[in-house]
Length: 277
Length: 241
Image (cartoon, rainbow over all chains, first blue to last red; front, side):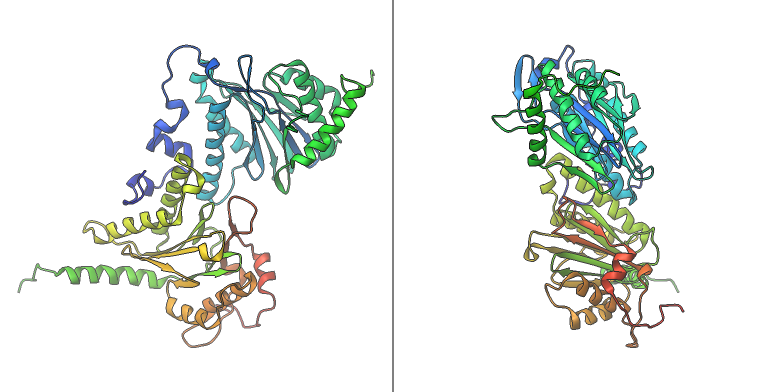
């Protein structure tokens, strides 16, 4: 790292406001997509993160992730964090190859911050979602070797004044979701649960309860998704974004909601019943 | 009669220094002060788009006077350097000292190289610490000299006049509003002794606030925030009216 010398000419050259572009020109070996990986499936070599759920409510959006990382049939970590603030008004949750995903999140966070510092203004919510798509697209080669990263992006759109959710595929396809969405191995079950539980008029606490219920259902039927760990008091990571910015819900708040969900499940293990018609 | 070809190195450097100093003296001043919760940067800048004060990293800010295109280049280079270092190592490994060093080397090399015109800029690099004693303020001049400043400092057009005014009114550990008032009054003090009231729209103010609970301690103060911090001001006509 050059610090005691004159700043290299490339640093002083006006150009892109993108840190990714700068890194690609100056230190391409630091980009995950430029790294050569041997042929074959590398998916079993590293832990995988699983289920992420997000849902909007009037005035914001919440995102929650379970705490389990698996490596084959082994639980690699029981308190991994998979929901991260991307900047003040957005967050990203990750499913897939955990190490790579965390690296992409760091790059994404820095990409947004770098742009903000250079330009003196933040990117639009769509602009942020597109930058994340670019990052995921560049990872396609590794995805085909079993190191896929599938994020879920949520943000409070200051212009439109409501929460928005974007999902991605491994080729960088970007899809805006309405109301709620889920990614990861337990996502089918979580989405099924949210279909029955979600209502548009839920407040923040109601919305958090719904996503915690959905994660419970995901953990109920998917072995790679971790349920609430009552003995160790490990509960999902929940982030909420409103007009006043990103807030990670304190553990005590999530624990209280999770305890209510669990006590309900003691009576009815399948969770709250929805009316038939 | 032919002109002599020989120019002594002393003369050459003096000419280059005079050139840079003249450019810097044309601009308006920037002041930096330590206050109770961090470091305050204040400048008179009628433009809302072209900043003289900017965020570099979590705890590091940058202020400049002189030629805009030159210090803007240095600012962007600083952001790139800091982000690159923070990404390679860790956010805590990005220091104001390292950045000041890189700027000093760059400015020094440009100043003494025959091929390049010296930069007509002066910079402050401020880094807020966990306590006032850990705050760092570096002042960099056009020729790459670095000075460690304590308490307060001013640079730009009427830097000496402004610094004298601050010296008379500044106290360490002042709250934000008091420190801001000292800084704004100092920027408004003129050679003739008459006080000028700079309208809030023409002030560019930012703080590195160690009590901010985000990782990034830099915050710009908006016009309404400035108006409420400055409170009632004397009814002298603003500049130009």
